[in-house]
Image 1 (tube, rainbow, N blue to C red):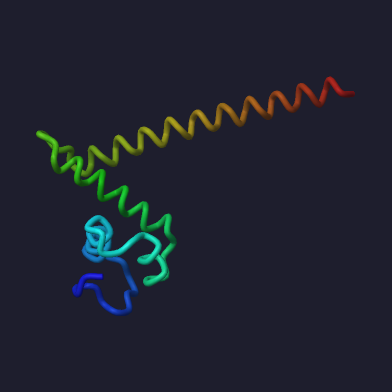
Image 2 (cartoon, helix red, strand yellow; image 1 turned 90 degrees about the vertical axis):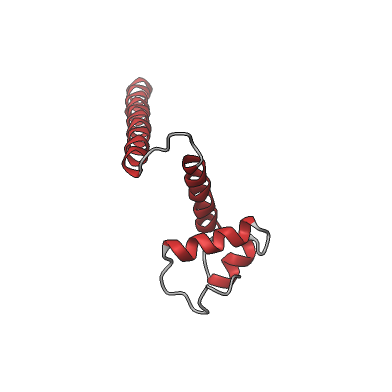
Amino acid sequence: MSTTMEDEIKRWMAKRKSALVLDIIQGKTTVSEASRSYDLGPSEVENWIDDAKRGMENALRAKPEDIREQYERQLKDLQEAYGEAMLELRARKKLQSLLGEEEK
């Protein structure tokens, strides 16, 4: 791990997260090694890597989106997914009630 990282980390600020992600990208450590060393879940570290990739992609665009636009787009996607999940749940409940009535 880079020397800028403290021995015992109580809070993972953006600067520390980015240093760890950079070490992983540069091959200085792996997700599993970092997870063990810092008592983090591998999925948490992988989420940081995914966030970093999205940030790099945005930074390298000809016309980068600002943070607000990114969050609004992400919120819209999540709302759509939630709506679809609710429709599916309602359809399953309706099907269960119909099948339950037919069995009687």
